Image 1 (cartoon, rainbow, N blue to C red):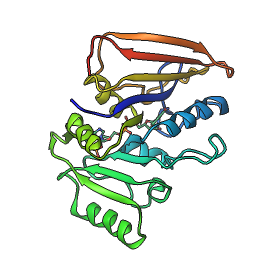
Image 2 (tube, rainbow, N blue to C red):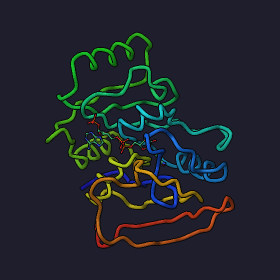
Image 3 (cartoon, rainbow, N blue to C red):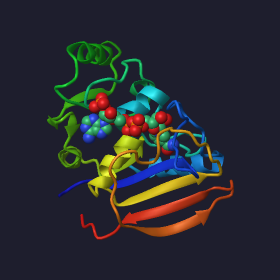
Image 4 (cartoon, rainbow, N blue to C red):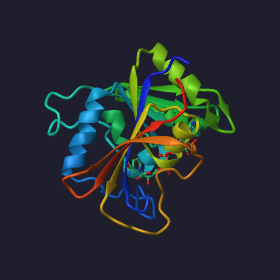
Amino acid sequence: MDRPYIHINCASTLDGKIARPDGSRLRISGEHDMERVHRLRAEMGAILVGADTVINDDPKLIVKEKFVPDPPELTKIILDGKGRIPASSRFLRTKGTSLIATSESCSGEWFENITEAIEHEDLDAEVIMLPCVNDVFDLSKMLEELNGMKVESVLVEGGSVTISQFVSKGLFDIMTIYYGPMLIGGSGPTIMDRDGISGVDIEDVQRTYEGGILLTIRPSNISR
Ligand SMILES: NC(=O)c1ccc[n+]([C@@H]2O[C@H](COP(=O)([O-])OP(=O)(O)OC[C@H]3O[C@@H](n4cnc5c(N)ncnc54)[C@H](OP(=O)(O)O)[C@@H]3O)[C@@H](O)[C@H]2O)c1
């Protein structure tokens, strides 16, 4: 399958949590790791997150100038099968094209709200309808479409459900996990709350300046 290069990146506590127990944002990365993430974003053509990351964190999905001078614009891709992200989301109003992938399961009201915001505010955004089975898109088909749009690389930043889908289907080339020095406990979202794969190659383990660990993983026995 022709697809863009996929890098999955996330930050986790040492007990595998990527957010607080109530799903709200947990600052795991220090400044040094944030710089790594923004430099990584700057090398990629697109950044992709799931709907609940937008709903919980309201991220801007940009490359910050404080980390990368003259930052490039990213294509921002949101997976939102049922159409739940608010039209007020911040990423819609930051630099770069936004692609909101949804399906026929989205409500007419949501579709109207989001397309109205795009038209009235002249936002650089597009809602793409994808065929779904049980409310889930075929990610391979979506990636083929991105390939057709000349998106050469995608940084998948989460959350848990989204990472699980890419990993369980072997749709990644490299995964980096920054483990921050904290053990938060509780029942918050983990790196992958859904299906995974058995067998990955650990390519590198680095101790960071901020007392964390940066783990680099590659899929094993999975050919592109
Ligand atoms: N520490 C980190 O690095 C990091 C990074 C990002 C996020 N987070 C945290 O992660 C949490 C959110 O993660 P999450 O697992 O709850 O949700 P998520 O992965 O952000 O979003 C899941 C939703 O995305 C949509 N989606 C994903 N794949 C899809 C597909 N193939 N087809 C159709 N829709 C698809 C679905 O929305 P519909 O239900 O609308 O279909 C699904 O319910 C937040 O607490 C956030 O703070 C942490």
